[in-house]
Length: 150
Image 1 (cartoon, rainbow, N blue to C red):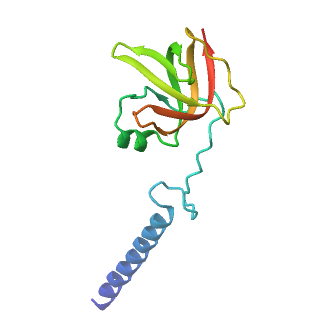
Image 2 (cartoon, rainbow, N blue to C red; image 1 turned 120 degrees about the vertical axis):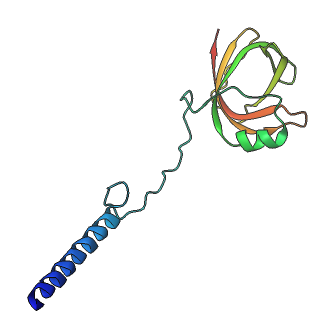
Image 3 (cartoon, rainbow, N blue to C red; image 1 turned 180 degrees about the vertical axis):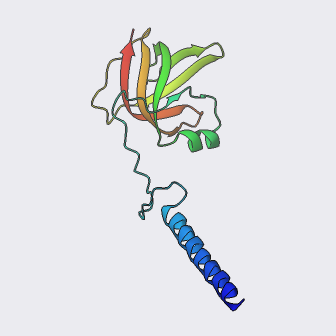
C-alpha cells in the first residue's frame, strides 16, 4: 500500500510540474502567440505628402469652437471642398457646398510652395492641416496642397 501511495504522489508531482511548465510557456507566448519579449510600440504617424488620402472628411463648417478644435486642430485631412462660387478681396473662398447656405473657408498659403490660382467655378480638393477657427467660427487651414479639377 505504501508503494501505491508513493506512486500516486510521484504522479501528482510530475503532473504539477507539467502544468507549471505549460503555464510558463503560455505566459511567455502571450495571448497573440508571438513569443516576442519586445513591447509593441506604435510607429509615429507620418505627415502625409500632397494628395495622399489622409482622411476623407465632410467638414462641419457650423461646428462650435470646442468640438471643432478637439476634432480638427493640427490634423491633416483630404478635404472635398466642392466648387468655388467667388473669392473676396481678402482671399477668402466662398463656396455653395450644400443647400443650407454659404460655407466660407479661409486658407493660409504663407508656407505653401505649391499654390495654384483658384478661380470661381473651380472644383477643389485639398490636403490641409487645420490651424483653428476664426472668431466667427470659420475653419482656418494651413499648409494646404491643393488640386483643381474643373
